[in-house]
Length: 362
Ligand code: PEP
Ligand code: MN
Image 1: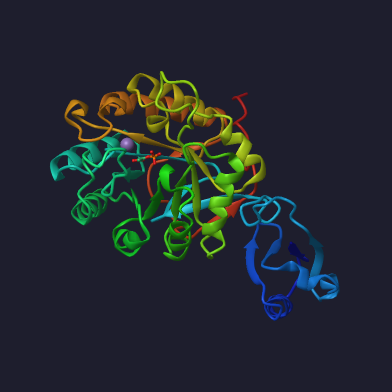
Image 2: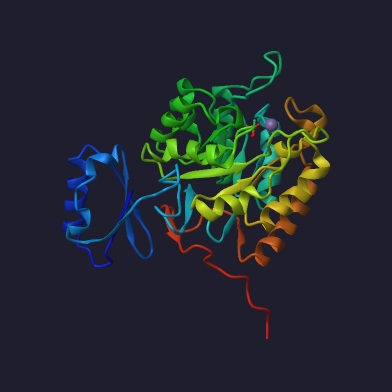
């Protein structure tokens, strides 16, 4: 259920509504929009059955949320959410390029790749230190050593860093180094992990599970939101289908489909979707054209030597060409690529579909 407050509600009235709800043992989540404030109630709402909430001073209306996900829904938060990572915005009119090696391997590789992606226009550096590998005999990542390298490189280039956390026991450590905690596809329904990253105080990039429906995906986001963390970025990274010429099938429809009912930014990962270098650029183009808030792309300067996912890594020159193209496509759909931190480093919102495509010059 949501409680919509009147535009002129005073601070005192608002506090009174919040205290009133808490007395019934319900959790209240407040969404401050540009036009209205909404309070989302989580818990056993049946206790409110005969309670006239509409009669409370400052309350405009009370509405049920019929969807299974509540805090992720547009009913709770109508405007596009913009998540900030060290001042870099993801969502709304901004398109953020997140790029780097699949795994942090050596300081030298990381340095060369990070410089290349930054020069090409990436705002956020990616790199796995804890790697979820199908085989226990494959390279598992450098662990904390890799996190340190990622942090140092990110700091040197003024780039926020995103890296995966695989287990509840790693959350504190990863959160010490990372700006965005990545929950991988294989962990999308690791509910304990979702709760822990929800408490970690850092933005979370949640990847869609290998065979997760959109509803399951959004319910997983709901776990994080319900712990009080509103800064969730969703990532479409391909789903398992009968098709085996690609690693996964890139579900481009997920982008507008999610956006129609959820306010969280949706980014795409064409690298893990395709598993093939030759498909990464066209899929990235499609994702941005469909309205994605960013792309997450594997880049490597010597992919033939990469310890993880070399066949899908773009070489730096191809990556730079791709970013130029994505910039043009983003402009067509009323967005633009963000190159680095912007002034306002706090999370804030802008109206849904805030910017239209620029009018052609007279
Ligand atoms: C990754 O981004 O490094 C990764 C392992 O992706 P996914 O969880 O989507 O397979
Ligand atoms: Mn990978």
